[in-house]
Image (cartoon, rainbow over all chains, first blue to last red; front, top):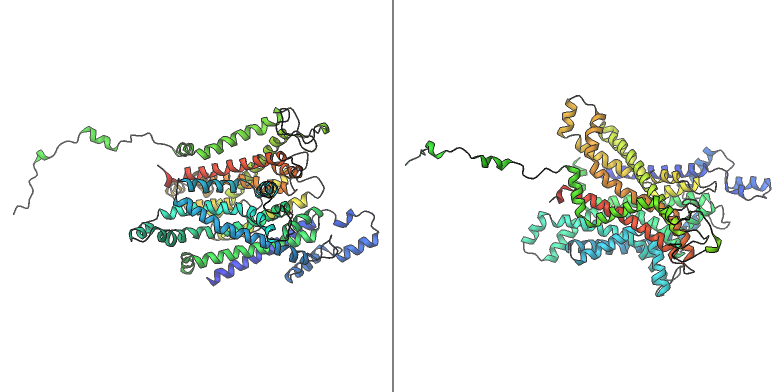
Length: 309
Length: 314
């Protein structure tokens, strides 16, 4: 068990290192540099700018310096913003993104498996069809369309909730729901098939024949077993939420990290692009690791297999 | 007490010819693929998906010629027209015919999806096949590498590569898009194929082939891969919508194909500008088409999976 954890941890570190290196190579293989575009710049100023960002040093040295900075948690200076460093921007944007992301995750985890379980318990009856319609909508309609539709129908026409922007809690409701839709649908679909499989197992018959109530059979025997494979999906869900957040923040005009990321791409602000990419990767890979560990802790069968080896 | 039974010859009689027919196969035997097709046909949702895909595939080529306008043709006297009898889906802010542009976008989206799936398939089968059939040590190393590749966030890679290659101000080319989309996405296919190989290489027919002198590559190509085509097909059908979705998201974020070419994602992105002034159709129509394509491939993939599952066999 401990050996396995250590191996997973080292692999995660390796992955992060690969991402840092790839990002560095990609960003430095772009022809030219951002200061070339500002045309009437005196040569001295240009040289000074290159020196400030360390672009005059050999590439290998730049790489070592960059790696050293990241280990210390410093993502460098933004090339476009004169006042904020990349760290400042991450500090400002990430809490906003994380708030919406977590809220969406909670919505998806609460309603997705529940919907799937209800569908499976009423197979081929109307609750099943209802939840499958939601699930199919959720996987077919990309979040940028869902978000736009929400704005159009719920905010603009009925004006229940603010159209966009950030500030009060009510600003976070529509984006979170729009973001939660796809993972919710995925969870519901997955839970439904997992639940159907479990309901056909002999131990469900045994539990029923013992004479315990239907509710107890469902909650204690069926759901607890069916939810296990669903937990393994959480890594994928986290990734989808992250990509969804770029789009959702763009539509709703939310000052989160996704918005900075998209802006930095438009501005060709390379330190910011690199910083956010690496930051995102670290967050995601730690989450994958966390889900893996959680899965092992929840499912005793996995632990037994690992220890038996 | 009488212990011996009296077996007289009269007790025995010749079995009639009719009883011999008890072992006879009465129904015609159904081969694997016709059987899959038979079960797929019973799945209404999957058939709807298949029909939609066929219509889209035909219209991707025919649709751009129907209205008589070209996808790049601008007409400033006809900007932002609502759908009417001339421009069936209306026009955009440059007076371009949206009907043609949408089918052009469908063509691009389908092409990107199919190509990405094809590349995933090729790399996945090769990588997974080699990992599964060679020694256990090579397998372990190859699977670790695959794990590392797969934990690199898919969209971040795609976005980064698009950024690097769009520098020259020419929009991302389709091949850069397809390349970046399949850069990490071949891993599930490789894992699937490897699993199939590990399972099927212990089978009797693989053993039989080996004892007749076949080498590993022959067994892989002639026996194992053909017998894993079912799950591979399911995987391909679900890879296509994933690639189309990723491309649409990129286009929506402004990293898609360069105008005047259009994909469904860039059309939706353009349409977003029309939304505040009430030109809802400009985003609604591309959005509808993206959703229909996603729907069609997803239900078809699900249908294949159900049709291939022997446990659901009736």
